[in-house]
Length: 283
Length: 283
Image (tube, rainbow over all chains, first blue to last red; front, side, top):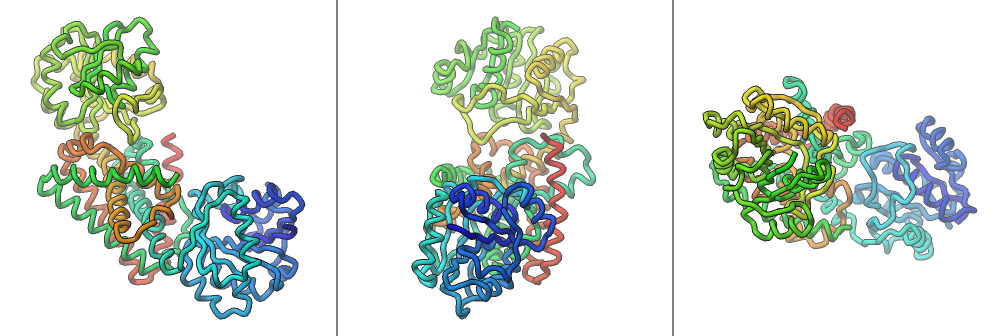
């Protein structure tokens, strides 16, 4: 690998840049970002080697697109317009249906691989980029058959070198499932944070009583609104479905408490304890 | 400190036992538990020195009561019946109002200190006990003025040796505030787990897509139903209030999505990001 261009030098793109530089010492990693501060930070931190612009992409062997999913809809076609026939482009967006649809008929569709690395933290920006972020993480690839074989291989070799495990899925199924295991968690966390902050306005010192349990449950409420708003927008239908089911489960739990049916309350929790075994499977 | 009796040799009681043994090498720690397996495990793991029964408590300098809050209502008066005038008893229950009320008129009320160490993990039993669990954790003390001064001092010295910070609060305020920062988090997590597990019944492999965000948000759903059911029962009114507010916030978020008001969705998240600063304050 020689020339890699990372568009969006934040947590996700920056972490790819760091690992690519470590894996392929001869590779030059170029950074593109419309936030000039982020470019400067990424240069200073050694996350990228050089600054670049989108018009220079004809020189790229690989392009990593790691920007909010609304920006991806706009920028991905431009990227494809600017690359050579030998360039592989992959994105890292948390939605796949709209993005795949957007470039469905692009003449360079076969240069694009739709990817979603299930990795990240609640932080953002180049300072949040870390080495080894992708090790042992799942990468969901959509519509793999629509990417040219030789170009797929380049990206898949990188993912393999990074220690990722690959899951193939169609974009519709991806967006539906990810709504449950990722998008809903973020909303449940944000709304938990909101509920407690609202209460604190009237009841001082409430946070002094918070322990690690609260901290863990509310962690995702630190996440970037600029990243998450377009995700919720693009995955609106699925996310609303998960919210309906979540709210209905919460109402049922509340009803059991109002009815003082604590045997049923016990059972609800006991059945959900099954999550232990499932989570052990994730690691 | 010479003779300490720990009733309930699980995560909370067992962790007290381990630290007390480390702090006061001459102290004998006795364990009482109606689960004989747990007593055997605690002995084997060196969590306790000896097995005891409740009728031997007249020998105790300190009694740590760390059992589910429904059992506490029954066992605490029996403990007070069995101790000497010089014994300090404290509990570790996540509710305080019913427990304080239960012993309000007990002749040995002044031997009891109502405590709630904000510490713990999602695990339970003697194997979950760990050294240093209480370091830098908050311990909420209720009705401190109802405990004999000399006996308070013994417990407070222990908490100080453990590195805990103390907050004094009345039982009503404790139960109300803890509903927000602890009890609600558990329900939000359990219901998130339930929602995703239910979906998984029809959609296989969904958990294969789960990352650390889901794991963190759903962590508390591993918690013990035997511990949590009586907490929700005793704190019913406050917990239902938090659930009402949480459900209403979730519905509002869903409504904004249905109305495609993504500017407002952004704002909801941006305002809740404030939790970052609050959480930094917790540590």
